[in-house]
Length: 178
Image (cartoon, rainbow, N blue to C red):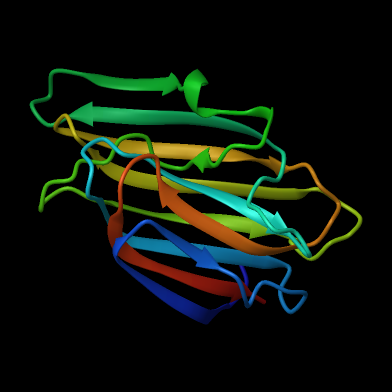
């Protein structure tokens, strides 16, 4: 892994979404988004993202993705590893879930990292992967793995994050990887 350079920090405080509309360019071949203390206003809301191609006016690029998780209940009654079919996309344009159902209590939140590769390429599709740990609303620690590609050869210069329902708090830092 290269050396990360902090480009921006976005702090959400009861925000409907966080849109990063500058700083994604050809300076870096990899961008890393670090999420800290993501806490939804609505119990069991999922954090999701979508991107926008240069010159686009909406976050609706086509994606093919996969989603799986490992989980362990707080009371030790269940541990599982499973594919989450209702959270992936096959050439979809919806916001892609990167968490599944974060609890909204004061002691519940999510943290994770999303990597986006070659967003400025006009030759190749854009690959990404993320890994999150969340306190699921039902006392459960869940380790979420999401990966896929954005099926466009247009350059990507904007990214948006929002909850599946309601607003959220948290910090999102964007790094360029040299």
